[in-house]
Image (cartoon, rainbow, N blue to C red; front, side, top):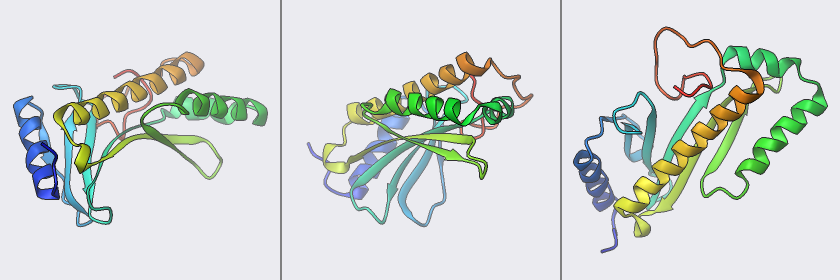
Length: 173
């Protein structure tokens, strides 16, 4: 049965997350009909967001991301312009045919600061399988980019306290 309204989408998503035992936090967001932050994978410190933006009726967006470790940023600053372009192009090529999207945020110096992954679909395609496929694709993309940074620049020292996926340095934490 197709989900036809935002309220049906909200109810279905809440039910599926509860059934699967996720830690669900409601995020206050005046621009969204619903906005949740969940642990994904289940029981981990990693977080993803499930958002239905009011500006785009029927759209559901799944988001996760990772902040680049300071050690990695320092090494990125040391790269030549050609090496930086090569590294950025490698990332672009790696994700060009992925089902999810990515966005690399850079500093004023052009150094990658954060990478965000998103998976979007409309409520007429919302199923539990579609929701969890999107979460899985975002998670795989995050693990892949962490691996790429760690292979290129080494595994960074981890901070004492984990503060959530959006703030974590690139590492397989």
